[in-house]
Length: 386
Length: 137
Image 1: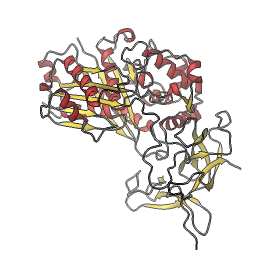
Image 2 (image 1 turned 180 degrees about the horizontal axis):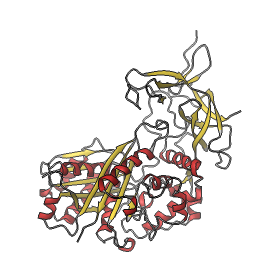
Image 3 (image 1 turned 90 degrees about the horizontal axis):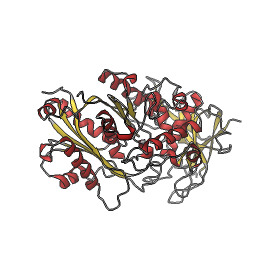
Image 4 (image 1 turned 120 degrees about the vertical axis):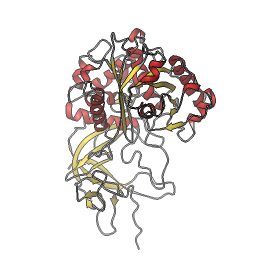
């Protein structure tokens, strides 16, 4: 009772895409029903609903989902934490089970973002003069362009190396039927694509899509009672951090320190190290971001990310495959869903169900998201023992 | 009879009698420098420990990006620069006086801050003073 392990016993995501005639609630509901079917439960077994969504955060999306799948009067907790929304929603469910308050909860992440255009920088003109384009740009491609160039300053990372991330993730997505895009993009094509904010070309920016993902979490007791050992993925670590003060954080959001802190906490909580990981799903909101996180997550030492790229160590078949799902770049980034969708990817490998992109014998995976503003969510998952 | 000069950010000061300058908020207790005024020191939580300080107009380029696709009405390409000022404080602004070409921009290069009228006005037609960085003379 309380402080038991928590398991993901059912998980699902919809194929990401563009759904002009579907509501957020209907998309979220579809993933929710999929996860519950996977866990062999019904809405009547769910004791709390954690609903993650950013763009309609004030719109009671959790309740709208309940209206689609069953209004049973359970608590609905509406969660938003920028791009870490999904991970935060799942983590809240995890915490409640650890606290012994519930045995079975549902976490859903959903977003309609197709056609949203460039995010950051342009919104909500305050009184006075908006600084966009005058004090640099607050657009996401620019913010992560700057972050990449800071890495280039220290380690000489090149435009081509950044572009290789995109080649890899697009290649991986050709093996993922649920990715929004499943198209190979050779290096020349990535580098010659429309430059958005150097060094990020259009193909190096995450795809704005509609999508949803959901997970059923259970206490160990409940999981065993229901005989779900064969598919239960154990949550070995669930961590959330924000950006502690660093000197440049005010003008250059520091996605590194909060990730490093979260990674240290996650490895300690899980009792594993980066060498124990069989695969990683990290936050490639832009190709430049992925490079930083190789080092932030200790997949290599500081300054060695370029080597990982050049040696293709993070490709399928490499030492530490990263973003086999296609990542945010190619699978897509429906903000509220991403933090659960990346755990779906891990679960598929850990359960031996990842098809063509399966990492053989995958046992431990790490999922990472960054919400700008800023926060970092990391989960470490372990596959079923049987 | 002089009107107060409108500035693009509260930390850009345009005194009636003197040159414009950038003002940081420095914590006596931990030394952290912030541009925005806050309720307490954001680094150490110090209460009533933060005092205004004039920032330097020289520094080094820490990072940049070159924007090619911008929001409507903004001319491209332009350089978005992150610069560390000598003595403390980091600013973000446009970099001018250099080609918007990654091969021409050296990370870590010396820069200086310059003050100028913003090339666009607000919705009410008011002019603003802004600041940029450019290669050091």
